[in-house]
Length: 268
Image 1: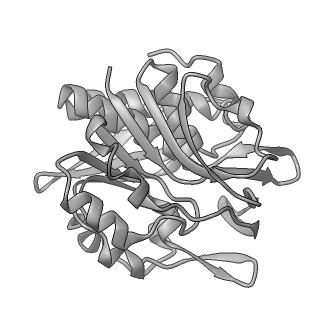
Image 2: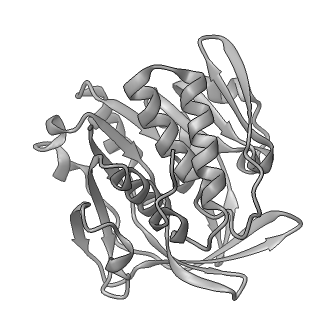
């Protein structure tokens, strides 16, 4: 199995006053990949109030000391998510990874709220021949008082990655066209909720349907899709197989609250 580094801060999520628990792309990506026996290291900042037991004990954790854990309050209105962020954890210094980066096969950048400096990402990507994957939602979020708005301006400073993932919901919140995003990576993936996904690769686009299940909570499904697709394609180079497997596992995860679905050992 592959050695994987996942960079980003986890969160404590409150969802419509119904669910309160651990979240953040770094948590979903690290948990789903370690559950399928990849060798996963997670580089993150959080405080003592983060429930460490929500992380697979097989994950190798590089933890920054932080007074706070990033907290999100999520509400759903007309199928769109609205965010508030009352607390943030310490930012991450990628200089700490320079000596260890060589041992990883794949590196995921999965920021939750601007904790990863894009200049440092450029330095790391341009000086290392690794398979770099971007799940960049934390770079397109901007604070307006305590509310979170979507703004893609910062992404123009990103280096070109192997893969990058966006949700259709995020793109609709901007004025961008798909062509504006294609240059960010060799493979561009747009997840489209219960419709499925669209993948842009080698001047072609491919549409994939989702698997229909009785959905309870879609939080983290896009992160799970990104993790499964990226690692399956990295291993097999089979785009159709990778996308269908990612769709299946991500869809199955929505039958549970938060990360419960990951620990139900979603089968291939």
